[in-house]
Length: 303
Ligand SMILES: [Zn+2]
Ligand SMILES: [Zn+2]
Image (tube, rainbow, N blue to C red):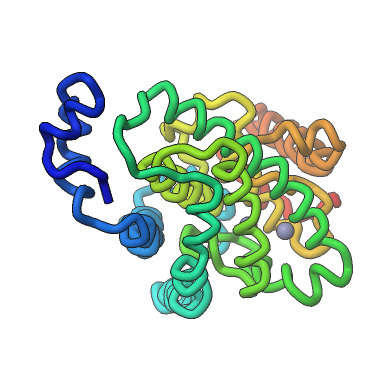
């Protein structure tokens, strides 16, 4: 809710005319409560987790040879009914856990100072805050994920997320309800550290989910924009973590690769990549063709 009677009052308070974006924001949010604006996140979560993974399901359905060559574990194919079951379970989790949590967590958002007011943040401010959020999320998530791989954490909680040894987009939030709650903490720490505008908060929640869907997509597509982000993990990186499974001591980070590098938890992955490259080069030199994934010619787990 904005504290102005009309757009002229808002311009007078800012000491300048509103930009186009600010006019749109004024018209949309002036008479809506901050709580209602915050709850938009619930809708965004449902839309993002329904629409974005659907893109990867379509890649499976189209079954184009060239696109399928980018599939990380081409031997594993889920049927449409198995995929739908995953989607249904995730939606049930959203309705029973994530949605209610969003509804009651508004006071904490208000307390850390997420604002809905004018002026709107500049693109530079939004970009800088999102960068900080991703760094904080990645570092905190890394240690929480490592903890979940201790014997107790894995058997009691994290095992559910690892049911998919070849993950799909819909499996990104597929996890024990306690893990969903716990891993909400790293996502909240960034905005709590550097609170911004509600629009930045919406963007953060949506981008974090899209990133998680991509890393669980099962496709290492060469033309995704994330390929240009330095130290970005991506689909192949996290897919390896699922492929190795419960005993995995590799690739814990959710977004970037530097934590695993610094703390030495990417050794199994790097060894596997090296072996696969040598195998591929060997196959090429004998004139044979290969699918180009870590289980296309051998199935072994080095961790
Ligand atoms: Zn794990
Ligand atoms: Zn995962």
